Amino acid sequence: MTYANDLKKAAALEAVKAVKDGMVIGLGTGSTAAFAIEALGEQVKQGLKIVAVPTSNKSADMAKGFGIQLVDLEMHPVIDVTIDGADEVERDSLNMIKGRGGALLREKIVALASRQVVIVVDDSKITAKLGTKAPLPVEIVPFGWKTTVQRLIELIPGQSADSIVLRRAQDGQPFISDEENYILDCHLGTINDAPHMEALISNVIGVVGTGLFINIASQVIVAAPDGVRCLSNS
Ligand code: A5P
Image (tube, rainbow, N blue to C red):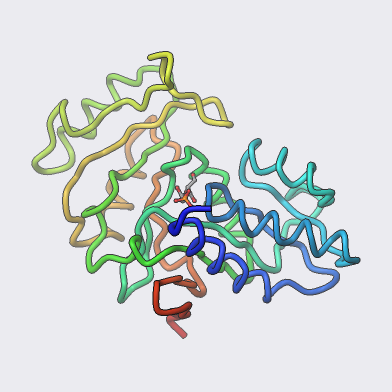
């Protein structure tokens, strides 16, 4: 295991301490959340009784492999605890950019249905301002996608065709999300007012959701070389 993976695992193991018998758990997506799914799988084998709502087909497959019972939001509209990763976390606000793994839409739906959202990251993800480490993913419907890109370029100051890029799969075809949409990676630079940017982009016709998660994290567990710490707004 690499050192980076050691940190991700340390954060994930701290997060799963919040999980108790009888809970409905939201399962995040990405390499850090995967460590949490694995740890929960081990606890389920030891007798932990939970049901879980996955945020992606990939996490669903992984959870099934570990013997975790999956349910959906129709059966369980309120989730007790969701454990998920992030691409960037703003230190003071705990606002985030998510969606590098393409699961931003389901991740946001699950997070907003959760009483508690525990984010697990290594310390490389912590930033003073969003937009400095990761592009902002924006999920859009495929129909008329170039028109949607043009609207975004016109709407967001300083943007061009080079800064708003259609995500592509390895074969060069457009990347398709689990909800069968396209994803734009928006290289906006520093986002000074994340709530305003979220409102601006969300209002564009064709946009299904953005990777800006505003006031959603309950706590952020950060693993660093000198130990694991918990950031919280409350
Ligand atoms: C998935 O769509 C993302 O939101 C992930 O949660 C995010 O990319 C973090 O992934 P890693 O833990 O692999 O960095």
